[in-house]
Image (cartoon, rainbow, N blue to C red; front, side, top):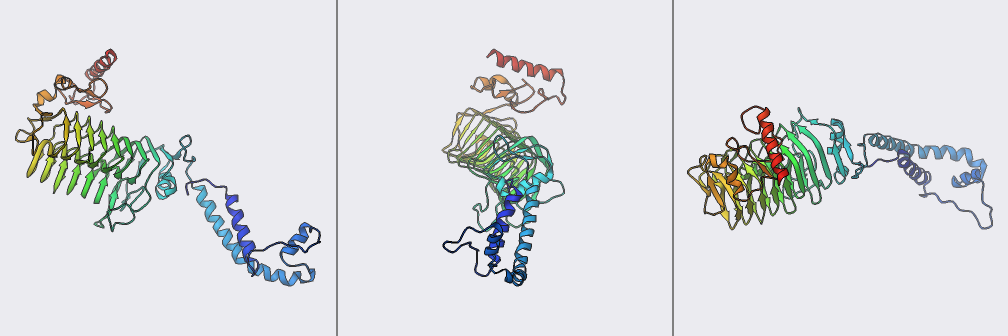
Length: 452
């Protein structure tokens, strides 16, 4: 599916093929005339096609002919009915940027999820979709179809999915111990794909490896998305993305649901491999039974980049456990902070659990919350700085370090840690209510931006 078809155009070639091929034993019919014979009339042509030049044979051969074309015609009709019914269920739109496929109901969502032909075009969600009462065993869109290896086998999503600020609610995926990989709303977003402006609220996802609330593995662009689902797996699990690969980018996203797993466990991303995570945050509580456990990212490696991010959830694991990142292997972390409680057995850090040739640009962690650990579990770096809670809630701590409080960050002095400007946040002063004081903070920051 995935394309609108004229049912008449579908029917005509099928009828022609069955009629011409099956009407006689000799195969497809051919019209010919002896040399010198004039072009026959329409009636004569029909008689010639049927081999009825001798009209006296018409009665005998008609009976035989009708008998022999009955079954093909019946098959043709059945095929036509199926094709026409399926065509009627197609999504509105044509899959182009100007006229995307449009999901306007739960039935439309099911149609989109079931048909890979939609997954390379442009799609726009025009309603919330509530999946309560369902339990999937694989990813809903672009699932892996072979769990006997760790490679993705299936059709990747390579189109553009615009959530249009709608949400998918109560997604439940449980592989029931089958060892299924690449689990999430999307199994695998391939190169050139994009998912944006989409929320995932409630529900739970559990499986073996490459598990995330939104996507199991990402090799493309994810922006302005969030997940509140709880997620668990054995390997490479994140609240939003299981693994962010090669050409992947995650920006302006957040996660809040609990995350648990064995290896490479992160509040937002399980493993970030040579890719970027920017302007994101996680408040998820994260727990791991093994190593590489972080409040935002479990493992950042291969020149992976993390910038303008924070995490505030508690982090518990065994080895290489960090408030922001479990292990940073040749990766870069800039203008980030963490405030959650960190607990583990070895290589525990307020910001990063274990570092191997990573590089840092002015990052902070709360030493009042974690007084007994270093900023990095196995080493020191002058750009990873511990501050008290009071200092972490003071704007000058960050502006003096060069952080951008015009375009990226804002803070309510003495009441909150910095937050990202794209966050939809009403209680700006952190007093548990929304009133004029919050508006005054918003106006103050707006005027500050105008002045600069």
